[in-house]
Image (tube, rainbow, N blue to C red; front, side):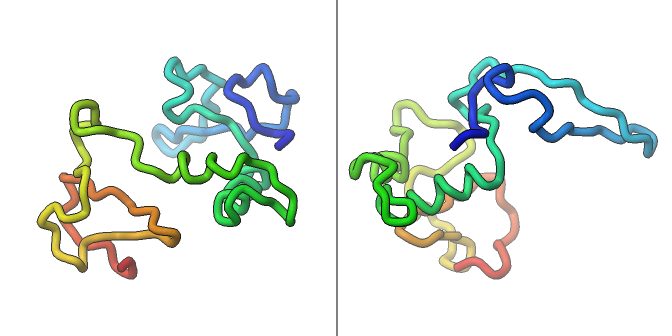
Amino acid sequence: MQHTAWHLTDLPAGVHAMPYVSPLGVGVPIPPYAVTRYPAGGVRTSVNDLSTLFIALLDGGRYQGVRVLDAATPEQMLRFQDTAADKPDNIVLNVESGLPKARRATLGLACKVRSLRRTRRALPGFR
């Protein structure tokens, strides 16, 4: 994964996308900024690098037949990380949360999409 880093300065110049905001219909570039809690979601990566990681996760840590992650890593990455004592206030920790089955969304490999308490409509197409 040659185009993945926590810090923008660790990536080659000019390889990242420039985000824009459109106040009054005029595109204005947003300059690069730092995420102070970067492990919580501030990784910068390319589509190819992210795809490589996901393929390895789906294949138990292997990519194109070569082990790129320790065998235990995918299991740790796919497990629920929060506890009842330390969890965000907008998620439900178990799927038996009272939501009807039609409103639960799941992904393959038993990786479940956590239901937002604020969800008001079912997610069409998900089961």
